[in-house]
Length: 140
Image 1 (cartoon, rainbow, N blue to C red):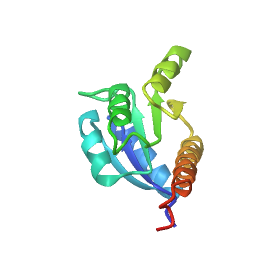
Image 2 (image 1 turned 30 degrees about the horizontal axis):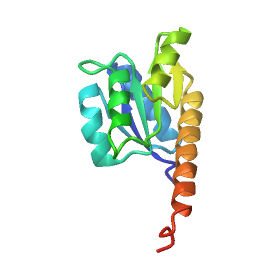
Image 3 (image 1 turned 135 degrees about the horizontal axis):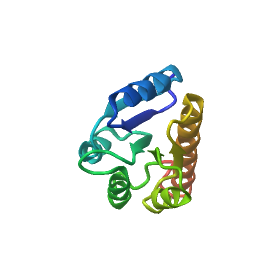
Image 4 (image 1 turned 60 degrees about the vertical axis):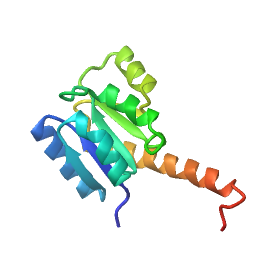
């Protein structure tokens, strides 16, 4: 059974393949891409459960993509996990300010990535369920 669908944006081919394989082995459905410019249209089309963004994407960097996702009504709720080779506290602060629910330093352990994606996607689902159950028309 699939845990959730992940939109993964990583420009380095080997890393993208490694992340995709480890996530698929953990039960995730993964749509992987190499460019930040295609994240937004794919997120609108695919409606993933979580988006993973490398900071250093070509064309449009991951933090700019995260800000775009947060600004669009269709994608504003999506949990975003940012991956970065930079390990300074200010890098994580910038990612969080752009809308990231989680920040992982590269290289991250495959179990850490899978656990983080499961955690943030489940937290998002619970929040959406709570919002839906509070609406008068939720049962209709």
